[in-house]
View: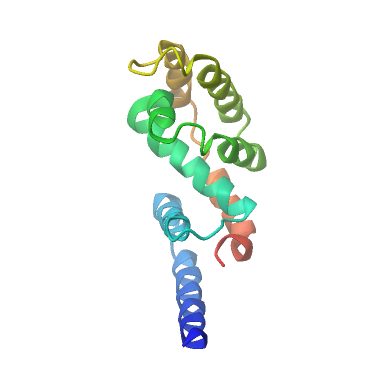
Length: 151
């Protein structure tokens, strides 16, 4: 039974890689994130590159939805190190600085703002929204490392 399942997984991966060749922008990013989150929720271990991609995707979704406060409220510090590593790898320097600062604020203030929004995140949120997003940097990274990320 295992060889058939393994063969089925290989076919799905080939199909996904072929599909990714036809996609760009948000569509490409969504498909990659969906694949990685499926792996994670199946309780499989992600490699370092996969962690970086999925962590930055989660960071984006949470911050754009409710700021750094929501990112930490929903995830505590589960994804911040992967996001920091990813932003560093992608060359998203300004976002990297914001992520590092957010982690410092979170670790410093997490006991103070258990039931309230932490206002110290507000300037970071504002800057995050102002910057030209690094989506293309993440996509280029995934494309350059496709076989290590989609496997």
